[in-house]
Length: 418
Image (cartoon, rainbow, N blue to C red; front, side, top):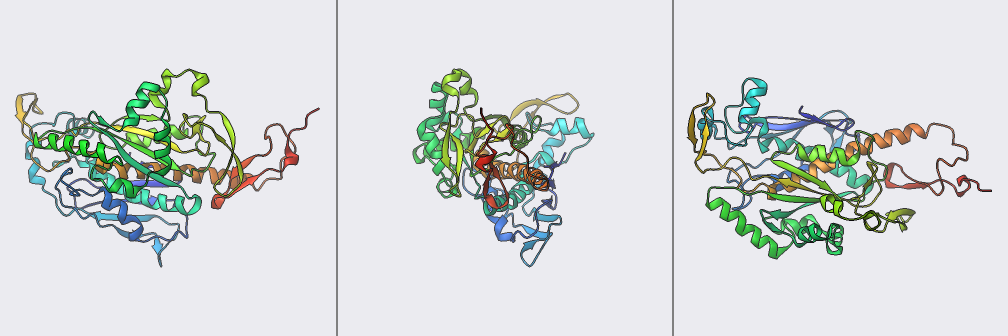
């Protein structure tokens, strides 16, 4: 379906060559300061034509808020966001009337609906993600103001060109100290300084060469994006089927061209024995200066039992090589006759540089939806009489409350011992 989320619900609309694309956000809390200037930066980071590494399609992707705000603040009613398509060239896709593109969604959409958009990828196009990025920017602003949450994604590999931590983790099975430090310090400013969106300048140069090599050959190449979410409220995630990592995987694998997802130590962690992989608990100081429990290492990736534990959440997504290329490809027509498809149009030789804000947006939407679920639970629980002394809730016990504060059950609530 085209709707994501339960409490913070986002419905996207539009195809790659229709009049416009956008989204409806339902469930945004009232009173959030919001204008187009809060949303536009992420759309600008996603837009095509940013460098010679992306598609030359010239779209400005200017967003307009159609509803749900007044005097620069959200009303709590549905927020309508729209972005016009201005540089459509549907005539570039006449060949796909005869041949379904290899590894694209032309044939499967036809099988499902009995018809398909005649130009571009329709709803399977990356143009659809504009609505996601716009909605993600709204969610991100709320999370930043309420909890100081930060979401940063960067390109970690293109083809076989990868940042050093990937090879190190493949060998050791667990993340290196340098990678853990990067997760704590990397910023969007660092990432956007490179056209590849890779914060390692030397590796970025090699990535650039690899993408240009694919482009000049009328070919394409895939890659991976790593994302970190910092200052995450604790207690997020709804076991058993809506665990936080399950929702993140759902969100990431809904992005066009994604093929893989791993969180924390990921597949590498399967090689490490439990006594080395377990994250020991230690006392830490929270963002507001309160005493909290944290982990010495973070191989879990900030989630245990499907619930956030307050540590950085980090994960990596694999994107395949874009399916639409300008090389002639032997294939078969819709009626089963062998032929050759020579695709025209303007396409990304590698999607990962432009995918980073899309990954950030989907991460923000997941966290926002989980926050609203947890706050609803805590608000309801706060209406009840205080619980008696019980071993079910050892003290000191820290909970998330609105405003990013932390409250601690009184020491008197500690279970009594003989």
